[in-house]
Image (cartoon, rainbow, N blue to C red; front, side, top):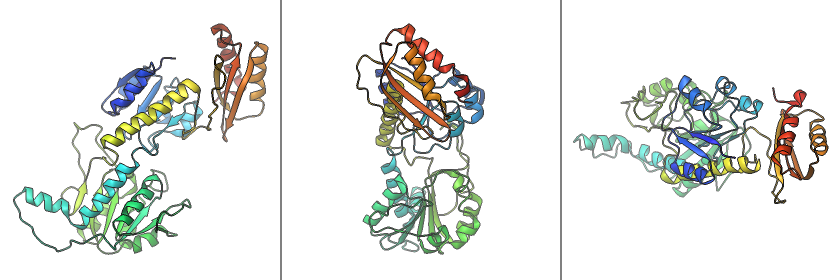
Length: 401
């Protein structure tokens, strides 16, 4: 079926080409729309792809329940109300692996740049100032890197850091297998006390918001550095500015901010501007040609997998379903319902009464949702297929709220 797919925030054109090759109509938008503009664009689409800036709140999703699918062309998914999307029967995909290397490489580059004050030295040279000095400039070899959040990116950072001769500690609320010689610490406070560099790799949650504030900066080693390439909400910027100006924190590299421009045409402002040994970058951790192309193709493939075969493996808010297509010529149907007893029996009764023979079937559930996929024989006629769909969706007591 031909879908109208809306891709926002300058998603790599490779995604558009891949989706058009599969027969879909694709619209690319270079910025992050808000309010009435976003609603108007969604009204014309059945599938939407976003990056990190566009906010798909419960209110926006409830105003557009016709959406079949959402794709986050990035790792994070906190910009989408996942519970509301699930309640409306809208699966959400992301790209958890594609930009991992790009972000990790940026973090390592920033560790070296901060330790050598390269940002300030470069700016001074541009201004005609010859500041040849070793004061405050150190090697990273032998220093301790503390990683907060040991997921796909954090663990890659640890591997690269060890190649630089660094000692790696990490803190994560979930027990993770240490890679290389990295070591887990029990508390954030312990990590802060022992680290020369602190790099954040956490999602935006109630637990992580403002997780580094005045108290945490005071707990850090004097002369330590802070790197945030995760979410802008996890660092108290004003407290960081104070710690930098007091010289307790020797430098910072910040790629994400509490408030970010919606497009390159808007002006960026931050209290960190002009502070010594601070590297500010415009949310470019995953902005490499390789990463963006890979993300575009990864999420586009997830779109087609769901639209053509009903596969939800890889979604972040839906039960995983991966039923192989083993019966050429059969008709595949899918149904999303509340996870309550009796739904599958009612669906199978409807199919049987209309003369359909189930060749393969899969059911996956979580606490709230049931997701059923079935391949049906002798239901290839459009009228019978339509009748099955209409009767299944008429099971009112089991529809999603």
